[in-house]
Length: 295
Image 1 (tube, rainbow, N blue to C red):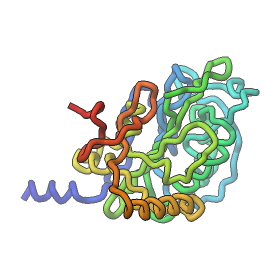
Image 2 (tube, rainbow, N blue to C red):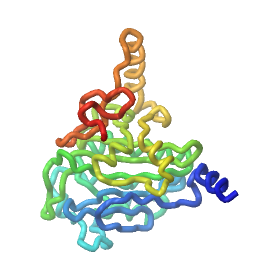
Image 3 (cartoon, rainbow, N blue to C red):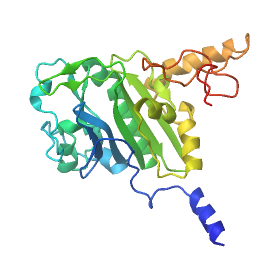
């Protein structure tokens, strides 16, 4: 009977009895009321920012406070306003202000500089903003989701400010929906103007872990975690029409092409030394090409 009960519990969604899924990584963990982050002192920004996003957060009426300021909870001292002044880079939110409209405190907390990362203006105000809006729509649809955002320090673009804040080459966002069959989705986007639709930036959570060294959602049973983190299935998520029109047309074109030639294997998921995804095709039945086959 005990064994049966344990099996049933493992099959249940985690909503209600597991309220936090903090990523595992190096860095100082800083807990605020509405989100938690891991601060990377050498890069002067967060490795990750984790938050539980609810429909109530999104439906809130609180206006932007724009009270950008250092984070007093970071023991080693966070970035300062002077670091971004005149840099040409936006103070890009990792936990978005528009997602924390529940009350004044939730909104104001998003303006700590520990929650910022140097983003190119056409990235922050373009594809990154679209992704943030899409994530909010998922919270409205399902009631609540779990989100982790952060930089990827590959092909970095230099530094800014007296504290020499690293300008990341890429950013990621990972979303876990615990409802129904449970699902995860992850995105990796270069710190530049977006040229694709959101579904075209979808990757596996495993790939984000490989590029960052961060372990996401480790509290889940391994059987569930491994399955969800290996999946690359944007079709399981509802994207707004504005973000999928080009993607849908592309899929239609690929479908027509597949009737005239054999389907090729998918792209290798390995990350090269330069920080880019391997361009070779994966071997049949594997995620990796011949060179990157895991032993």
